[in-house]
Image (cartoon, rainbow, N blue to C red; front, side):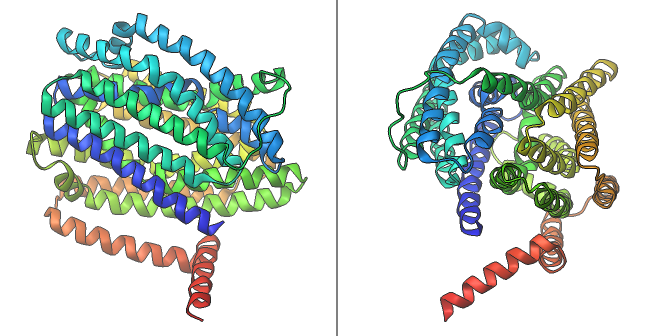
Length: 492
């Protein structure tokens, strides 16, 4: 388990860092401008659309049904879901092509007419291939997750981001924006081929049987889509609210979110994927007590870790943004805007980490309807904040925070009701972490430090926090002891 986690974490970190490199290239070429916003819309749309309509829900449906099952069952299920994915997303690509300009206006209302038209044309061509390719690749991801072979899943993400970066560099060098679409298409096809080969490498050919998923699976998929797709809507809605404040503001949110949520999409995402299979197996064996205990320990560890990363990130934010974006067309004022937005995103990190744990636990015993309730409440809070707040550069960030705060509270309530365990100690940890982070953010804004000192102080805080986590947290001690024993065996 620890070996798979380590390798998967390394590959996913490489993928996310490549995604960060992609945004750095956009920022340094275009700064905070409408042209940069257009490029960000085209580059991010395929994965956001597939996640909204498919990818984030498929593991929640497929993994609990495949975990612990034989290879023939996994192969047959994967074939059925792949057929459905290809059919649905070929149609989705055609819809995007016909409504491409309306979609761009919805995603980035702050773009002027020429930039919106350029983004729409590029988006339409890339969607015809990238959407079906991405949806089928997500089925392969779920099959790999059920088999405990996450490393291949994240290898596909590395290949995808390399393709996007290649297309973006060619577009910047030639001045031909169409190469952005070319990079999206090549990246999507490369990931698809890799996922199909990896997910079927250890499986037999699917035996003849049903061609499509059964009615119960499709019903579960509908609920899972409503749950997981809502979290993607948080990002899309927040980006649109930011864009409405003027050209370049979508970029502020994108860059801040990319850097601030990088830990969420690496350490926490890998831990969540591995835990879903373990908790699902425990539930299928009737051992709910073990699953409940592991959930409590896992939530405590994730709150510790997320608060630590957020605190160090807040302190280091000016130095990180300067190192990443302090060249090219990014002015000092633009860097300051991204820094402040990044600190707000980091404040939300403990909420997002708690949400991952709660949602995974609900998934493990198929309480998907509760997730729909939680995420729907979060989306309602986001819409209310967006409607009531004035059109300013911070409206999108405030609405984004309202969504995560509301969703986490509702998910916590639903899980506590099902398990008769409110986990008051963990709830206190979460509230204390949010208070400390908010106070730190306000202090750093009023008393800025030299960016080099920020980085040094953040490194000290991170090292001290990791030491405390490995010494005092049960899961942290487990990782420390396993790693130490492994090294001792190698030396011996």
